[in-house]
Image (cartoon, rainbow, N blue to C red):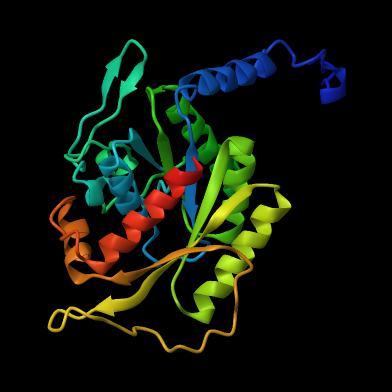
Length: 291
């Protein structure tokens, strides 16, 4: 049997006829066109899991919406997509249209794009790998490929704010910063503990290295609202040793009623006099003042 010469990559002319470069550029242009009506993108990250990042993302969107702004949320945490549950759009249907998928809308008028509307809690999103080894490389690439497809094939419309709920991890903040580029600003979420502040500090350093704009940080669970006396009491020891070299946008006390609403997917049943709601409203007003 005659053995034919095997060509190496160096023997190929350009992309070998795959037109892969043209395909990538075309998709990027499509993403830019779809997001052209978005005035401001803010990614909500932490580096630390369990700090209430998704809850604050939705509640902040809720306050911006109450100020008359057009707001949507992109849930970029594919294997922890809680925004659908929190916003009450868990059973929403994605309807295709001429300009892409129509965003499901929560009862308080916030557009929601979340894998949580498609995948049950008991299932993980599987980025199937064709690699025989080192499949984690393929999976990470596939994840951002899926995110690009979502951005390019969704009708985002005209928005004042698009909030992006990020997955946890300091390195994940850096990855998303590089993915979105200068278009996006960041808000980091922490809780009043040195463990959390240390991780958020790493996230901030990673974002500075990428040249990203970091607006500041929000301290969640900054005390708790006592059901009996309605005052805010300490939840964590006041012995902060790690200071964040970043603007503190505000502190949000833990509100049991707000937590219950998030579990049930209810948006507007918390009193405007709640310290948590008042803090969120002030942060939203400050964002609007500089937008």
